[in-house]
Length: 200
Image (cartoon, rainbow, N blue to C red):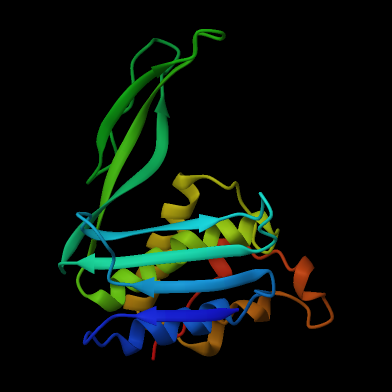
């Protein structure tokens, strides 16, 4: 995998070191390149994309943008709130709000989408959050971690990785420790609770 780093005069040693450490725990041979830059256009905060193979392109490609300014708030998606048997809904979790009200016309089931926010204080934290989020899509699709390949789960993993980084977790709980050494790298499936990062 080829790294493309274009941050201009901005330094982000901790975030970039974490990104290399994190992806180094997995089989990235099917990734053509992983790009981290300051973004283009009118978007702010952090954003990115994971391209899957297809249309003559045999490899994955992952792009993460961190234009800032920092600190900033990232809008995140949380598990939906489903209607109770009496038709009422639970309260939104603390720090979250209700989003769109959805009704399944086939089954009649109702739910609200739930919107949260994650604060990233620096460009290092922004890199960690968006790298974890976009990497989740690649890692789940290649069956290297457990879960469902949804935006909700990608946001959840990104939040977990950022919290763990802030807590200063070190190499004592590196994710490879959860998998026998004899397991082929392509077949490693790790649950998110083991994917704790190393802080430089």
